[in-house]
Length: 139
Image (tube, rainbow, N blue to C red; front, side):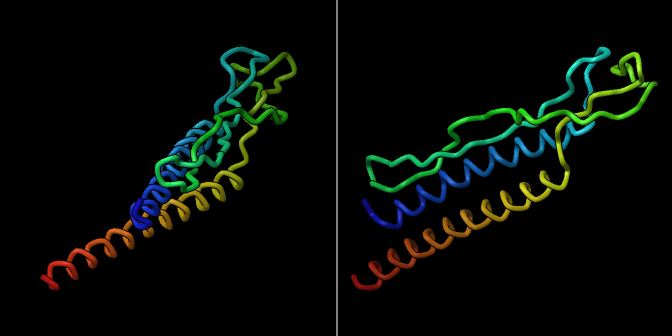
């Protein structure tokens, strides 16, 4: 298989993986304040993404894929909010185990990785176009 096509496949797998990661981080950020519906109920639990390398049999290239979507089993924080419907008898509410600083860092890293993979595809496409132009000019 052509190395340029193989590099595009590798970058495309990275785009797909980072797209999933961005979606999961966005869900975490959107639900950072989602509490349970009833007193003592667990709130939203932070979601995680795990990647794995997979060898493409056609090209022999190592691709990335999402191997597992999981949940962070960390402890929930608590806040005193007696007016919240999820508050227990003492007025304490469990809040999600989402740290916005971590989510922002994950989002930034995923975005930069996505952009790098996209740039790699653009470079490969430009090299293929240049090769085609050279072949046309030589005829």
